Length: 333
Image (cartoon, rainbow, N blue to C red; front, side):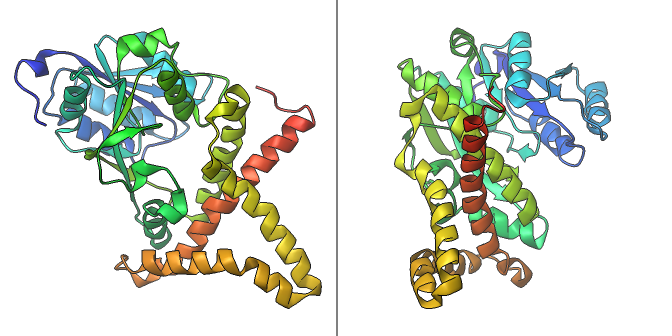
């Protein structure tokens, strides 16, 4: 999967949306600067950071002329991606997250797969990384099928066509032909773009040899907020593309009223309430025990059930909150 000398002469544009990433973006840029595919245009698009993100980027720019910094006044990710796309000069685009790192072969390997001519987009496995005890539990939960359902890129080990890839690599011409990312969305813009890409007849490839180390949320509360945002974003995508919904997308929204109903019943009939919640509780317990075994830090293991709950309940609450907002005629995008 190593790029040849001839291939490394072809410019690849890496686009990095960022906002308040002073703790992580330095490592991201260092990883990109070390790529064995050295013909890079690295475009960072800052969404009005109030911390030292811009200063960190500017320090890297002073050392490496391949790095460019653009401004995103709208402060939403799809706008940042489109701003970057407008400045892209390379034949290929690789999207990177501002709290991710990759090994030195990543860009060259991803582009080598695109050059095969069979794929409209290529992505790899996104492995969560935790620093705090809760963060380590969250990273482990993200690698569990119980936690993320059909999101293969969190745990897959076999190369295969998929419906969505994380931080994908794409031909620039295809990105532009499809109109880039939908700026009406505040979340799930990557899934929505991949849906339109597949509708155009292109195929997405998941290659687990491409690995992304992704700094996941480090507290259960922030994980809940993240997944609540994801759930709300899924409603907006479903409004645009109803046939993009899958049965797995409905599980968290159904779980939330089920648990609420069980809790209400338990107030008067505790045994019946316990019986109703037992199937989910059993699945949660089994998955938590299995996931916790892989954690070396005992302090991290206790957070695993809470991480699963934050993901499931956060997503479900986000769906219902956004749906109710739309029913009230508020917040249409």
